[in-house]
Image (cartoon, rainbow, N blue to C red; front, side, top):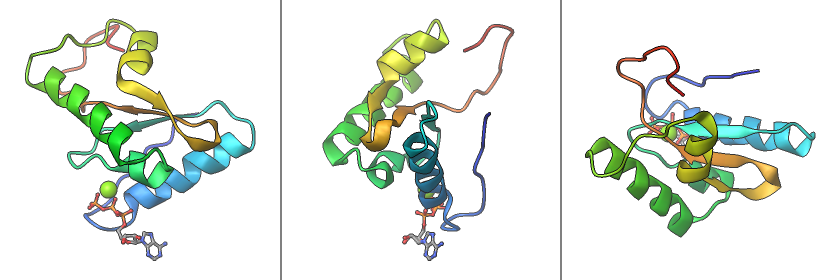
Amino acid sequence: MKIAVVGKGGSGKTTTSAVLARTFARHGHETLALDCDTNPNLGISLGLGEEATERLVTVRDAVDAGEEDHAVSPDDLVERFGAPAPDGVRLAVVSAIQNPEPGCP
Ligand SMILES: Nc1ncnc2c1ncn2[C@@H]1O[C@H](COP(=O)(O)OP(=O)(O)OP(=O)(O)O)[C@@H](O)[C@H]1O
Ligand SMILES: [Mg+2]
């Protein structure tokens, strides 16, 4: 199951996403939370902590700046852009896909 949380600024997207992710994970579902917001602070709401969240954001920014390669597979994406968060959630801070191509993770 894939769930996307969207809405206008300040409407509760990040809070809702974090509660959903932690609730699914607590119920035993393998849960991957993807933060593709321009202001990526889902890690804070998930309880990952400021330092680890900032580290993931830095890696994503390096990809956006062309200083780091894109992920070559979904597993690579989760490994390189992700970190384990409380309750068993895995968070990855990623870019929005501008021009998706077949096979794009
Ligand atoms: N259900 C709720 N009831 C009351 N306050 C809430 C609720 N959900 C979120 N908030 C509060 O509203 C504010 C904005 O929430 P949040 O950061 O989740 O929104 P957002 O849509 O992700 O914002 P942004 O567009 O800036 O990313 C926060 O202070 C949050 O604590
Ligand atoms: Mg937000």
